[in-house]
Length: 264
Length: 193
Image (cartoon, rainbow over all chains, first blue to last red; front, side, top):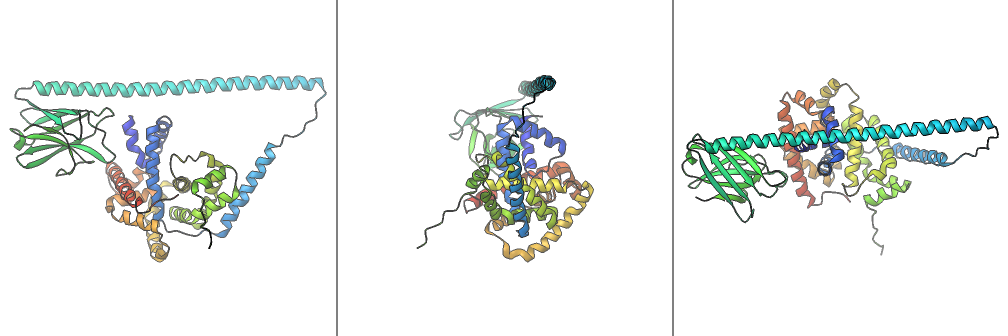
């Protein structure tokens, strides 16, 4: 499971709505992922507000007293536990041998315990490495498949390609869109700024004054994104391609700023 | 003229509890008992069970106050998360089938008591209720079933007779929308110390 898969699960986790197995896997991931822990904190801040939807109710007065009485009990127990009882020294030499044996046994036990903990840590580290390598392998495989698909598309007879140039919203960003004679298109973008939560980039086909919506896509941590879409028939001969930032899932008409646009 | 009294913040109370200050725990209880107890009664549908869990929550606050990290969120969020987690654990001890069957019933009885308790609505409650009212029913219902009935996503799908993928999408969209709406309310005073 990838980092993005875990990130997707976090809102449901904040609602305690994950299945037990998913919850366990996500909790393991959270131990080593500060970004996901921050994300969970933010979602929990939202879900905490839902508590106000419940009717406020006054508990019985004895609850407060009961809590404070138990706290005093806990404090008293802790105070007792801190007192070291006075033990008179043992004179019997056989008892001394017994004590030495107990000490030796304790040392052996502690050494075994340390060894087990070290083995457990090593196992955890190896498992983590295997997961990372598997995720990287999966990404490389996916990238390779996409590259092959892009080459196939570009080399097919009658295919066209257009370059999208950056607007002041995304200095340094670039994108290319290639499509074959059936309209099957592939867009590859680089250098885009990260979209905030709830936003995505959306492709547009502009013919005359008409803006036809394409699909949405997200970018990776390096600002690269990729999209497979279908060029509308009306846009096959002559169209301007543009990329805007829109609410996640896309919109039927552009509402956000243009980040990349092709020349007409 | 009386000097203006400066109220201790929740974070200060948490720090005092770490130093084993019982009065700080009592003060924190006084501030949030009503909202937390209301939440637990809504989840457990029993005053007796809710009072029991409320005691467990504040004993846990006493023992684990040092775990609270103010850089990760507000004490209110920590308290609600703790209380809800305990409440959900308690209710999940019931058979899953019973929980799914009872989920609607709890909601209905709460709707009745809501009408009676309008007078107790706080400003914060009004903001949350207003935000929830802006969510489509199809997004709000899965959120309520998860939050107050402790149902998992697959249990919600079974309860609503909807595909699991659809339920996941609606929950996520609903929560995102709610976050936006509550964030807008923050500027109008939503939130705690």
